[in-house]
Length: 403
Image 1 (tube, rainbow, N blue to C red):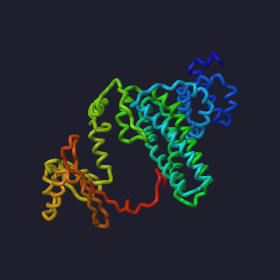
Image 2 (cartoon, rainbow, N blue to C red):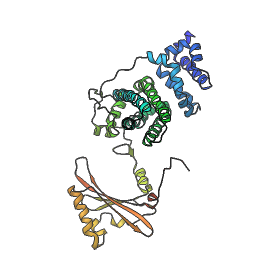
Image 3 (cartoon, rainbow, N blue to C red):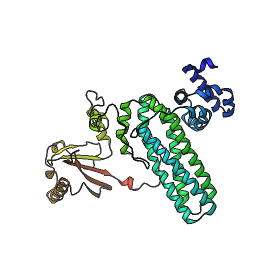
Image 4 (tube, rainbow, N blue to C red):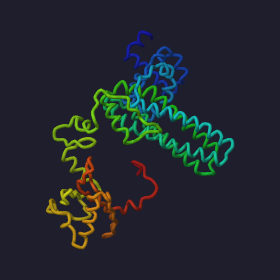
């Protein structure tokens, strides 16, 4: 077999064969015995590439996700030998790893706390356990940065495996954190059930750390460009971090300011660059007229400049009002109230004004928002009206695509 091991494509074919055997029930130990030489040299990049190929060939993502731990167990020896790519404080991968280190310590503390609670069961121990489990909710930010910032850039490089497999495991972890926290709030919960659920959750989170360190991060560092990492770093603060503060030692070679990054992202002719992404005028118009709300925009000079022409407007508007002073669009009895809102917005005294009324069997929420530019200058007022009767009647939960 040695003549094949140095050949990347042949190596991937053998890895693919191993994974298929695992999926058909063969044990990890059997696989290790037969393919021991390959398992010692397989790289994280090889494993991730083969998993993605299997998904593309029709293997359900859920099946890859279900046996992901088995894959890692089979290749653990080679993954442990693989040298991790170096990174610098401030680089997104460095921050991810720092969070993983903190999470490991939090889980170590939880191991002790839950053992004490199971054996002693005192109220002080329960309170400490609740507090420590609540910390795990904060770690969800780590997963959210992966899902919303790292995965999209990997997909731009045609690397879909992590987002399709890891995201599902994130959801399992989130659900188990919520479930565990709920059980801890119920004093009648069975301690054995709590212990079993925590052990399952702890194992899931520790295994995810391992998969990130040994597969995801090396694969990402191999594929993403310096510019990609720069964009990711610029976006991280929007979601936040888990008990760490990112350093600033890492300096990307393309060191552009956030504003420059937004305006130099390859705008296509005919597209309007926005703070995140770019759209055609037609797309913007369709978007605004599709929203289930009425929008009216009044500029800094109190003149009406836009309203969304939706099919079922709550309040009628005519194109004749464009350019008209907003004060003239209201009856005399309410002009003073309108002016008060505008004056408060302009002075910065308030940024939002909200009202709700009943009209023709509808319950309508009306909100006014002050608009300011990046320099803090007042640029106008946005009026948003919405019929909310059905929203007020909602109860419980309705998951996506649950009919």
